[in-house]
Length: 412
Image 1: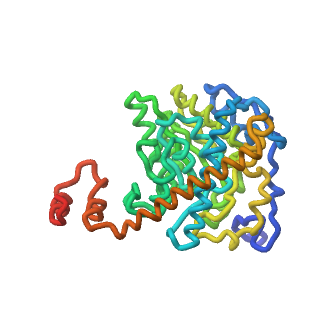
Image 2: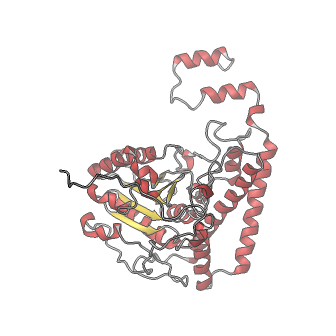
Image 3: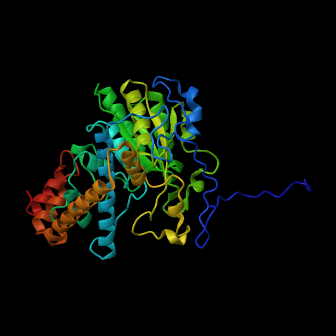
């Protein structure tokens, strides 16, 4: 006993800290096109290697290669580029507004735009999404007005949420966009439950959910995978591994020991790990999972390997926990630039078209912002509006005691 080594505890630490140069030496992306695309009815146990590899379609020259190439039409590619650029234009302008004191809070999608855009186009518009605060591209793809998003961010009199939700935590049942929860783990369990209900009703709509790498350490994650596996729920469970959960790096959620996709293996679920900055690859793996779900073959877990280029939100200062220039060194590049390069290589896009689209979208977002500022703060609305917002949209059928309270306030 005296010769036994003293026990010690391993505390995961990021490879780089503020003031140090970025270090992505451990990130070694494989060549694009190197992995096979299995049939959708494959047994999960037969494709375990896809949980540890990285599905990539776009090579370094912007060419689409390999079995996972979805062979998308140029118009679809341009639609994807527009969704991503609209998201970025909105993000940039809203963050400036927050810094100017015009709004209270915002969370950007910088570096992750391909995930929402690629998946939105692979899903059907009536499939239900259970997103995080970085999938606003799903709303944009489904035609939700940018002006309505600006109204909510500003919490003005035209705010569709009537001030009852954080600025960029959107919700639209008509657009298949379930209310965003700040505690992201719940999105998985709610999505699985919704998908199970859809199947019980004999519907043909599927669900998709998104959480970050940090939320995979929560109980909701494992409960959702258990139910999804047992009941073969028609759901796509997306893990957005952007390397950072607020200020803690992904190693604290278990990313040092294995991939996040690998967690699906113990539940008997197929797991795919994809280059989250590759629009074509994201579309391809999502289309595979969609077909599987609609064929009553069950759920799929997808890990999107990407990087959060900016802060977790406007309340976060990433320079306090990682090198200031780290985002520029991310080996998988910028998703918008990569899709732009691909379209130009196809002869379906040009620098001039790209500049013109950027200007068009900037004008669109600028106009939405002007409308939000002109509407005036919700706090200045008349008391009747405030009371209605307090009592409405809480219960499917308002209970008697709330009806009495509303009546006492002149709402009855």
